[in-house]
Structure formats: C-alpha cells, structure tokens
Amino acid sequence: MSDDKKDSSGIHVVLLGPPGSGKGTQSPMLVKEHNICHLSSGDILRSAATAQTPLGQEVNKIINEGKLVPDDLIVELIKENLKRPECKNGFVLDGFPRTVDQAKQLDSMLSQNNKKLDRALHFQINDDLLFERSAGRLLHPASGRIYHRTFSPPRQSMLDDITGEPLVRRTDDKEDVMKKRIRSYHEQTSPVLKYYKDRNILSTIDASLSKESVWEQIKEILPRKAL
Ligand code: AP5
Ligand code: MG
Image 1 (cartoon, protein in one colour):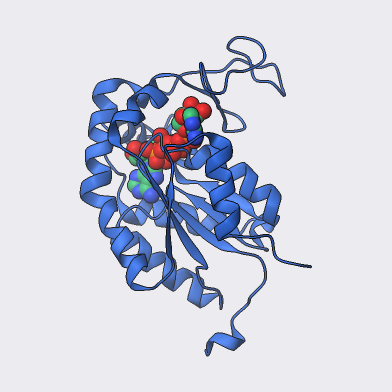
Image 2 (cartoon, helix red, strand yellow):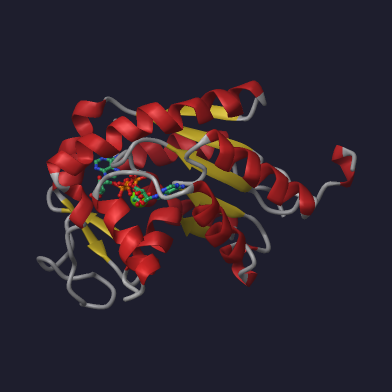
C-alpha cells in the first residue's frame, strides 16, 4: 500500500532508553497530549509475573535476573494489548521494542493494519545517573504511576496521591540487577537505535534534565496535531 493510503490518525511512537531514563514518567503526558494509549512492556510483564503459573514464575525470574524475556512472548503480549479500544488513535510504546527482531515484528504488525511508526524517541542519559533514579523509585503497581523519594515524592510518604494505596519498590531496582539491566540495554537494545536512524524516524532527547525540560523537548518533536 502506498504511503498516502496509510492511516494517518493519531501518533504512533516508541520510547527507547536505558532503565531509569524516564520513559514511564513521560508516557502519561504523551497520552494526555495526543489522546493515545500507553503500553509499558515492563508493566504488562510485571502483571503477567504475578500469576501463579509456570509462565508467571518464569517471567518473574527473568525480570529479577535483569535479562530480557523471549522476543516471541513479548511480541504476542503487545499484539494483544494493541487491540484495546484506547489504542485506536495511536500509542506510546514504552520499553518495546528492545531488540532488532522485536522492531521488525512491530513493523510487520503495523503494516498489516495499514499503520506505520511515526517516531522513535531516544532518551539519552549517562549510566551514572540511572542508579540514583532507580534507587529512589516508588511504584503504584495497579496504575503504573511512578514517584521518586527525592525528585518526585508522593504527597504522603509511601502512598499513591490518587488512591491512597501503598507504593512499592521494584524488586529489579536493586543495584546488582540494575547493572545487568543497563548491560543488556547496551548490548541488545542499542542496535535498535540504528534500526530507526536508518529509517529516518529517530529523535534523541537529553533525558538527564528535569522532568519538565524533558517534556518540553518531546513537545517540540511531537507537537499536538491541529484538530
Ligand atoms: P521495564 O519496566 O520496561 O524497565 P526499563 O525499560 O528497564 O525501564 P524502567 O521502567 O526501569 O525506567 P523508565 O525509563 O521507565 O524510568 P522511570 O520513568 O520509571 O522492564 C522491566 C523488565 O521487563 C526488563 O528488565 C525485562 O526483563 C522485561 N522487559 C520489558 N520489556 C521487554 C521487552 N520489550 N523485551 C524483553 N523483555 C522486556 O523513571 C525512573 C525514576 O526516575 C523514577 O523514580 C522517576 O520518578 C525518576 N525520574 C524520571 N524522570 C526524571 C527526571 N527527568 N529527573 C529526575 N528524576 C526522574
Ligand atoms: Mg518504565
């Protein structure tokens, strides 16, 4: 199908960056700005990992070893989730794709639906900063809302601002697991940057700046479409 016949509604964007670079923090703002859905592969997998099944236990083990789950497993989960009605107008994929094979499978998934990826945003940041960010991270598991003890504290200590429910630390945020996650990012996910650069849809932002400054950079790259 020629490009002019492709579905041009909404935006379709993927976020690439190491653990703790701020992908999950920026995603809700993209959702609000563009009326699209947010699919976090990590949230989807953490939810799968709570199931008391052999698959759930295996996923839990892989996450806590700082490794990547098999490509086919995460591709299937993303494919299912993209069918959600709130994804009709577009999506922000946070943490997917993470290998070149996943990127290729996403492309074929989209072309089957006459869609294409608009942009890949690369959250660039020095590894040194990632440990402080993950060490202070707090999560509201049910919603995926993210806080930080120092940089983005909840109004009440250890409680979600909206529901008042308890916040938790992620089990894979321990320093030794973080080191493995960062290594797997450089080894397995960095090649995905070249994949999108070669397709002229890669934009790089400085993710070491404040949450607000990062958002300003994203808005420049992805301005809200006029209705
Ligand atoms: P996932 O949950 O995706 O983890 P990740 O990609 O490693 O990224 P994080 O969620 O750690 O970081 P983030 O960039 O979202 O940062 P955040 O906004 O929270 O994946 C977990 C695991 O699942 C993987 O290790 C793997 O096992 C598996 N997996 C997932 N996807 C997979 C795939 N596609 N294939 C195979 N396996 C997969 O911010 C971090 C902290 O910093 C927060 O506390 C936040 O408040 C703070 N912060 C954010 N921005 C700023 C800022 N600008 N200034 C100061 N503080 C900030
Ligand atoms: Mg995240």
